[in-house]
Length: 274
Image 1 (spheres, rainbow, N blue to C red):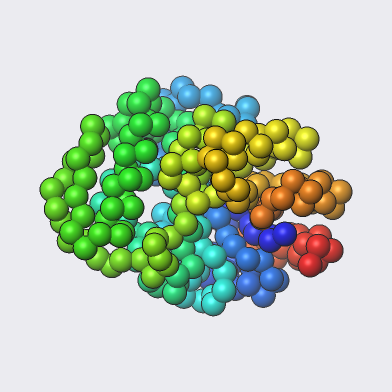
Image 2: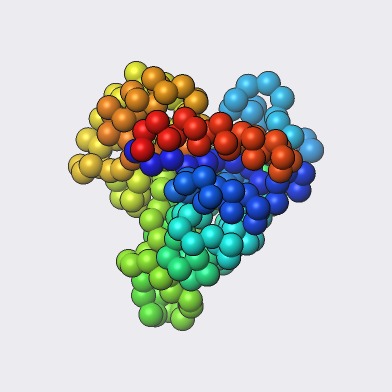
């Protein structure tokens, strides 16, 4: 079992570089960070967690800037988006950003992706929420083409470009792993485009059947990383019995001193399983 951290890095929380150093010093294998480009004032989409939208959603740093800063002060830590909102991202720019991060980190980039939930945020990027799943699939296929072909081209319903040169190419071959986030609606995306499934925070008894369903759809033993697991050793032990590759503790977007104390507590739990 591998242990990582998921969080929102904001302008009010611990800075990226000290966070990265603290994670590596405590033996965590990965950091997955969230992204939101902005939050519309007239948002009507309900927050999936229920209640008011937490403050950190309004204040996230650009994920690739933050992860690049972390990559320069670490040597082993996987630097991951968790998740990048591909429905709101230009595929050519995004391919370059991920490949640049992979180059800077020496092949440690992980591209965690999702379709998003905030319809008003998507609309400001010109995205129709009704077709965002198909849009994300096309953009991911185009990104892979840009990563893996010297002369890349793509012609689809939403993405269209004639042959182009696009560097840098990723260090990791054939490309950085794509971790697909979401529930059962994302299983076909995992099957076609995913190297792993980034599962929502679910108790083991609920997650187990979904892992079986996801792997049946994919037709292979897709690795699973679980987002925002509790600190309870018995629950983590149950995840190990489900053949989960990695669990992510959720780190609140707190100042540095508070974060370091929280990471110490997480590290004590993780140490029981190493």
